[in-house]
Image (cartoon, rainbow, N blue to C red; front, side):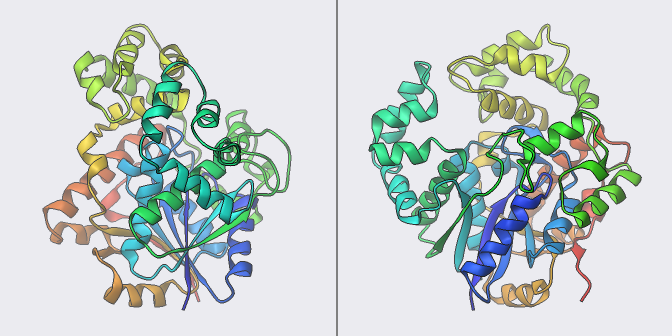
Length: 392
């Protein structure tokens, strides 16, 4: 029986995500769908605008059979580590046979070629050297790989797809790859579409757009309205500014250089900017330069706030926390009791009995959830929140 894995953020879940899951079911007939999803913080370098259990519920109500949490140390990380974390989580389930991902080109052979070239010895070093001189990733890639691969690696979703393939091959996962061609608005676009970019939806929220007027599936709007009535949506990131700046101003240059994305001098720039910045945005834009992208700066700032270490990023998956159970999720969980290589957790309180490694990982997630909740009117309690279960 086939099970297709998807690595995602769903922040928030929109028509493009629904299209992805629908296409997976069309391309892999009879498959179940398991998602590895970021929790309270995201790869772009920001706290999620919507609560992780609400996003997981939206996925389950729109075709996902099971949603697992991608640990914060891998979610709030550069593309290679984010991809590797997602692949590791899906592999640890022991049931996933296919790996699907959105792609601008939709060409699996081309993506596999790009992944192979980017894994060649010396590629990363040459790429970093060119980017340190101020070149963008796409421009640097164009100089160190074939024109065909450079074109692919210049597209945000294709780049991430190549990282997924690279990670899966390195881990010898045996996954069959299922590229799904993107439709609708491009990544980061403000284009109005049935399939909008998630960044455009978040921008509309920041501008004060009512939930009912967002370009989202109706059931997702209903979920977000419930979240809003309970004080869990939307996140007011401005409430976090003072807390983030207070944490960073207490850190030394050396401390900031030691955070996962803070090396190569970025820690020094964050330290200098934090001395006068009044908001997180001011801090990030002041520290940004040709060498350090805005996404990297943002990740570094939030990593510092949470207290993430390079050791946290290097650790493997200690357990799989279930965030939502969809139509066939119960059957998948029964299978995973025999196949999973790490404990599968449906009740977070059970983590206290699973050993020191699981407890330490759970405490890190609880800290991330708790710090994010400073931007909400509702409180958060990681160890008391059970997964969403879709009614039969």
